Image (cartoon, rainbow, N blue to C red):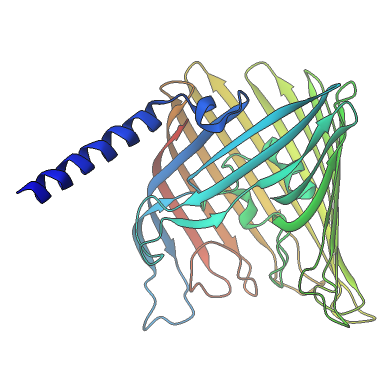
Length: 357
């Protein structure tokens, strides 16, 4: 009896202690007044289809599912070091909020995380972060680079599967301060698995100018030893967005070059047109993306049309509906449907909700 009572008292003390800790304000826990805990939950129920699959006997041509679209949480903060200099940090984790397919471990990826310094000279940091090439496209991206409806199913992707919409680890980045609307970003990713003959480094650069009516951006990325040793793959994109009251029209064009061999390269051109418009609590969006032929091989292109409607209950909560149709040429196999075959047409229809905190 006495032992049981002691155990009960210990449990009560632990509960009281934990309650006291979690009742403290976040700054007290972090011992830092510039600490922020944040996150986003993005889940939709969707129906996706593909009219062609590689193994018809075992692969379904349609399915209904719940998707956790890069739901995440993280914390970030800074410390004033004096003379306008700040130490900055951020850690962000991706979480699967709809199933336990990852062996009952909720986390399924590390997102933008870094440590660095910020001052009048700009910002310099090291960690795992989106490349400037990827970030410069975000101005016209409608789906946060996450869902099957996003333009990144095509733009930034080549016919041989190279993807330039990436977050680079082992990266050192520098961002200039905003100078009358002009900003420049640069990233250099190191190869922690370098060998005597292969060193897969990546250089990514962007420049952007923005004012009340216009956005213009240029991105460039070069990746050494990616496809062919001693050669580099590269991509360049140019964006423009004309802003009008409650909306904008944006366009992007990109050229991509892949080193298929020491003396041979393959080229591809992609393009996108995106439109957004807000009406009170509602917002509308649409884009059309098109990939050109890869290496001048016939029937290796694709096109995608996506539509989006969102209703904002508040600044933090949005209900959205979306539709996408992605059509491959007969020799192309882009898209979001696992097991699709060359020449497939893939469609998706979804209803979802986003809450940010």
